[in-house]
Amino acid sequence: MHGQTLKRLAADAQAATDRGAPLEALALWREALDLLPPGTGQHAQVTAKVTALSQQVDALGLAVPLAEAERKRSGMPKLLASMGALGLLLWKFKFVLLLLLGKGKLLLLGLTKASTLFSMLLAVGVYWTVWGWRFALGLVACIYVHEMGHVASLRRFGMQASAPMFIPGLGAFVRLKQSPVDGREDARVGLAGPIWGSAAAVVALVAAVVTGWKGLGAIAHAAAWLNVFNLLPLWQLDGGRGFRALARKQRWLAVAVVGATWFFTGESLFVLIGLAAAYRAAATAAPEEGDLRTLVEYSVLVAGLGALGWAAKHWTGATGVM
Image (cartoon, rainbow, N blue to C red; front, side, top):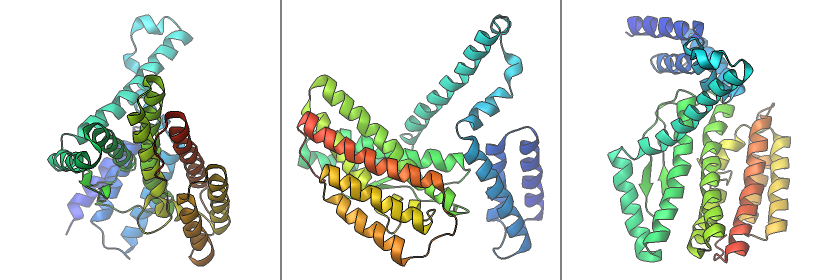
């Protein structure tokens, strides 16, 4: 039924691979995968291609967009070329700058979606009635950055998803239209939200310390709490998706990190996370080979957000909600 479409997608994906554009090739092969019935030989073959490209993109990290930009290096201005190593460094910095601008563009792009914008305004209105408009705007902005972290990771792996949708009182969500091919990919997408959300909380905390406004400290503390809550290794929460990629021993190491964070911060939410993590480590299926990067990211998020919440409370006088 989709024979011609599959041939075109395969040809385009191979062409993208040949010219050194793995991101483009990954998205094309994933599109082809959606057209194939599970359980067939073709589905297995394309799944293998998607997995291999996904691992390649994952291993290269930020080098992927830079490498694709480097394919256009032939356009380097003669002045920079004549400067030797310094010129090359400046030329490479251009690509880093474009990458950072791309992240900013992505954040703004989400606001162009009517469903995202209207649901955001609704959430601001609801929180406004409880905490005032300043806190409402700051909290919703931090939640938005968290969700756009998921969107950025989904785009990186060539997966299609809906725009962020806010549900007042429950945060927000992004609905996947394509599924991750393995636990590693699922973990990358899941933990990208708390990583971006942590960055937003850090910005709020720094602003609170610089300006002395306790309201920003309260926003930083609330944002840290929301991201910590999302690290619960249950259901479709971000922590649950991260734990999917961890082997049993790695899960117990994560439990130890959670316990240590609770010991040093005294925040009761970490007790709940620790109990849930221990249950996942002891009583649920786990892969034989876990993903070390996921363990590191999860552990750093737990400890870092614990420290961030503590700092927001003690440095700015923010009310503790953890």
